[in-house]
Image: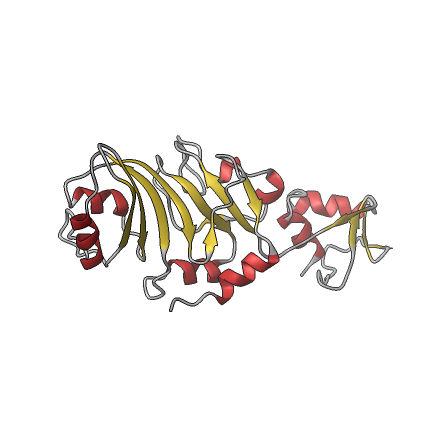
Amino acid sequence: MRIDKMLANLGYGSRKEVKQLLKSGAVKIDDVIVKDAKQHVDTAKHIVTLNGEIIEYREFIYLMMNKPQGVLSATEDSVGETVIDLLELEDQVYEPFPVGRLDKDTEGLLLITNDGQLAHRLLSPKKHVPKTYFAVIDQEVTDEDVKSFAEGVTLDDGYEAKPGKLKILKSGIRSDIELTITEGKFHQVKRMFEAVGKKVIYLKRISMGPLPLDETLELGEYRELTDEEVELLKEYQVV
C-alpha cells in the first residue's frame, strides 16, 4: 500500500495534506524518513511513525454496539442520528457500516464492520444465521402462538415467514418472550406478532449467530470484538 493512501485512509488529511506531512519529514518507515508519497509500505512488516508516534493500520475493523432507541442503523442520514455518528473518529475513518438493520426504536446487538465478505455471510438468506430477540408483548403470549411461530406465520403482505423459535419467559397481561428467527424482513418480529393479533411494545436483539450481546455495554456504547469473537464469526456454520 502507498504511504499516502495509508495515511489518508487513517484520517490524517487529504492526499494533498498528507503529501505536505511527508515533505515535512514527520513520517518514518522503520526509522527512515519517507518523503515520497508513492513509497509502498507493508503494514504487516514495517513500523510507520508520525512525529515519533507509531501508527497502527488495520484493513478491517469489527465492532459490537448496544444500539439505543432513536438511532438509525445506517451510515448516514440527512436528518437523524446514525450508529456511525456514535463512533469515535478514529473508528469512523475505517468507513464501517452496520451489518443489517435494527429498527429505529429497537435496541441491542448491532455489529459494525468494513469487512464486506463477513457481512455478506452473516446476512445472506442462504446462510440462515439465527438472530435472537427479547421482546415485551402487549398481551398474553400462549402455547398456541409458540406452535404458530414454529410452523411459520403469514405476514401482512402474504409472505410466509420461516419458522421461528418462540420461548415464553413470562406470561400475563404483558408477556416477556425470546424469539429466534433466521431471516430479517422489514419489521419482521413486529409483523410476526401482528400476524397472531399481538403487538410488540419493546424489542431488543440479544444475539446474532454465535455472538451474544455484551451486557456490560450501556446503550450507545460499543467495543471492538476480540480476536476470538472475530474468528468465531468467520468460522460459524449453521447446523
